[in-house]
Length: 246
Image (cartoon, rainbow, N blue to C red):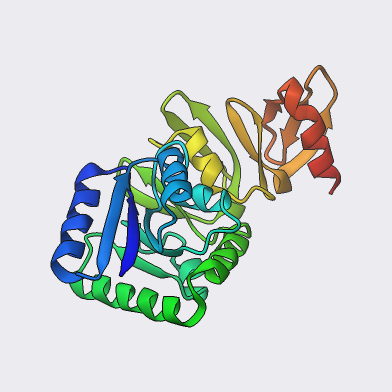
């Protein structure tokens, strides 16, 4: 018997997965459903599941952020995602399972079978969890950006900086154009590689590769390679200068 926890901010999607497990995977005991990373952290610590079904896209903290909080829990991970190119290379590279929404019963059954076999061999997915955390801390290959016309897949290397505008984000590209997305700046902050991108101000995230000059001041300013001058928050100044020196 596998004890499972479903983590998905979409109530309907979580309930659908629970129903599929009940219909097709009788050896799986769904211990609960939670809808945020914070609630998931509490549930995992309290119940120690064998496997978690983890939605990648969630508000405030996504699925990858949640994994960063765990170092010593031997649970396996099955990602659930609506984006078939979103971090799939990293997931597949480390032999972790993922299910593309809408979930196909046959794929769900196969994923559960892998978890059962893995549990019998090494007691769980902790080793794989360490691998995925390590891989995800590296460079993101493509960034999915919801736009009015659909989803644009951007190479992070082409982003100069991102500018928050309440519930929208303007993404300024090296080519000189910009894309406006309905995602918040906080959403993008959790998706972008932290070694390459830095939030210098509540309104801006910069690509450190495109900083051409730092101007002194209370917090100072950074001048980007395409000429934009962006304010730096006072409490971000020391960390920014340390990262630039690297």
